[in-house]
Structures are given as structure tokens and as C-alpha cells.
Amino acid sequence: MAKLSGQITVTAVGKIKAKHWRAAQDEYLKRLSRYTTINLVEVKDAVGRGQPDAAAMAREGEALLKASTNARRRIALTPTGKLLDSRAFARFVQKEVEEYGRIAFLIGGPLGFSPDVLDQCPVQISLSPLTFTHELARVILLEQLYRAATIVAGEKYHK
Amino acid sequence: MAKLSGQITVTAVGKIKAKHWRAAQDEYLKRLSRYTTINLVEVKDAVGRGQPDAAAMAREGEALLKASTNARRRIALTPTGKLLDSRAFARFVQKEVEEYGRIAFLIGGPLGFSPDVLDQCPVQISLSPLTFTHELARVILLEQLYRAATIVAGEKYHK
Image 1 (tube, rainbow over the protein chains, first blue to last red):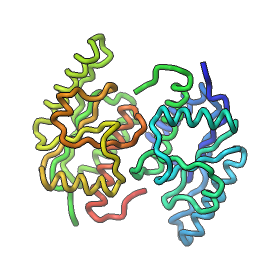
Image 2: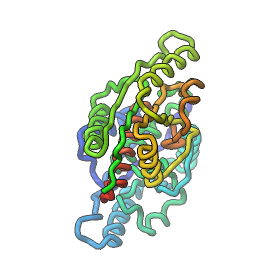
Image 3: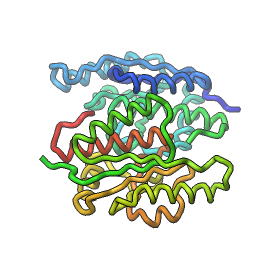
Image 4: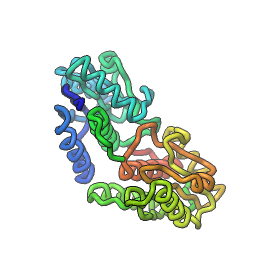
């Protein structure tokens, strides 16, 4: 059976505080760890803490890039990114890890990404045209990565 | 401030078992109840319990229709439905409750909807081309309904 034999880092702005969201996140991290090397890195949110928006966004961007330096390929989640269905997403992730080994998904803060971050992300993916909270976006991404791992492994996947 | 002054029913196949998903769902139900009359009706899942798929799907469909008889308009969530961004979704929900008063969103089981159900749903909406678990689909819908309520109320909404 095929495996996602690379290393996937999810780099996100902000901490998940609510216990139930953290539980959902941890469940998918645990499940994913049976299929691939998965890391989650939370960087400090800066927007909305008194700094001008552009400066705060640049600061979050630097932190996201630093947290993903180990990756040979960065993929940004943006509202205008490419929309894929779950099977196409699974093929995409498989192709990326096969080609680059270590990849990182970047989830921005409420204002999105600074131009510096987007310059470093050759691919942009969208989870939906809908806007989600950062908790929901993160959990959806992890659930889709888990689903992708089961699809690549040829397992009957969970609906 | 504008309000979603109708009645919204979310009718879904299956029970959410995991505590963290139930907590996420209940949080949005509680928040939504400050803006509109919201009901959640869970109908029994039948698919995967030994019956032929078509028969099980028909049975789930009957239960969904029965659970939403009070609504003057039914909206099905389907993978091929219309994709909206959050602001367009808010306008859509506002228009529907203004026109029909009582509306219902239907979330199907793993095989989707029987033709009988789709016949009763003049509109189909998609949350994303991605396939979600039923827990995730339900929580995303509730979060978007809450977001819609805050958009309609003209409040600064939560990212």
C-alpha cells in the first residue's frame, strides 16, 4: 500500500484555545501520525494587538516562514487558491511529498498573508470559498490530510 | 439591526457521538439562538446496517423529509450544489427566511440523498468540493449560519 512517506508540517497563526477544537485537532494529528510524519507549529498571532495591520501581518509572515524553513515546498491556504475535491487533494499531496519530501501547509491569520509569504508559496489551495475561523480551517485541513492518507493507502475511507 | 427573523431547522442523518464535536455543535447552536430560532433534528442513520443501500437511503430520506415538514423551504447540502462565499451565503439565508419564514437545511448520510429528497429541495448548496465527515459538515454549516447571522446583523464578524 502506498504511504505519504514524506514529512508534512502544518504551520498556523494563533493558538487553539477551546478544548473541543484542540481535541478535534489532536485526534487527527494522532490518526495522521500512523501514515506520515506530521508536525504542527503554532506561531504567535500579531494582528489586532495594537500594531498597524501591515506590520503585524509581516511579523506573522516572518514567523510562518521561519517555522517552515525545514520544508522544501510551501503551500498556502488562501480563499482564492485552487479548489480541489478530496481525491484530487489526495493526489496533490501525494505528488508533493514524492517530489519534495518535506512540505508545509501555511494557514494565515485573519488578514491573510503578507506578500513575502505568498512569494515563498508556489501553490495556493482553498478549502472552500467560505470563510472559516482559524480553528475550523486547521481542523478541516488536518481531516483532509488524514482522508488523503487513507485514500493514498487504498483504504475505504471514512465519510 | 437586521435579524434572521425566521425559523431555521438543520436536519441531519446520524448522531454526533464524539464529545468534542458535540461541544462544537452545541456552542454554535447556543450562539445562533441569540439571533434566530434554530432547531437541530437528528434522524436515524440506516446506510451500512445490512439493508440494501438504495432502501437504506430511501429510509433516511423519508426521515429527513418528515423531520422538516414544518419548513416552507428545504435546502439540500450536496457536493455538487452551489458554492458561495460567506457573504453570499448570508444574503442567501436572509432572502430565504424573509421569503419563506421557516426553512430547513438537510444534511444527508454517506451515500447522499434519495431522488425523493432532492425533488423536495429546490436549492442545493455545497460547503466545499471537499468531502467532509458528517460531524464536520454539520459544524461547518452551523458556523456559517452563525457567521451569516452576524453579517446580517451588521456586526463585525469573527474570523
